[in-house]
Image 1 (tube, rainbow, N blue to C red):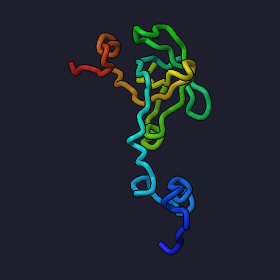
Image 2: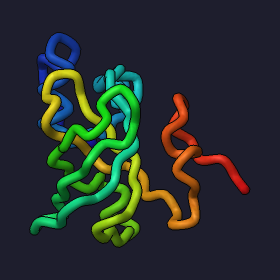
Image 3: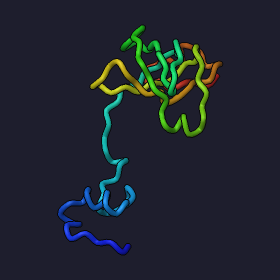
Length: 126
């Protein structure tokens, strides 16, 4: 690699920043092992704002008729998923900020309402 830091074993996170190592390096903890507590809900897009931000009204029972300000997840931006008002989406929100969320999935237009509001939040096929 060419560059070696004398404190590589005592400060593993700083060496990752210095050398630009990937997440699978033995010096860096893998990112996929970090646990994140998220609340998954189903909602409907009410309004579109700039920068891939949307106002979403929740349809799931735990927070019915609650409104969130949601942004589009990175994977959906990468695949250029288009979202319009009226679309039904799956939203992830953290327990730390109950006013904001992240849109992670757009349901197909033919998905029935009863399939969206089930406890596991996965649509059933017709």
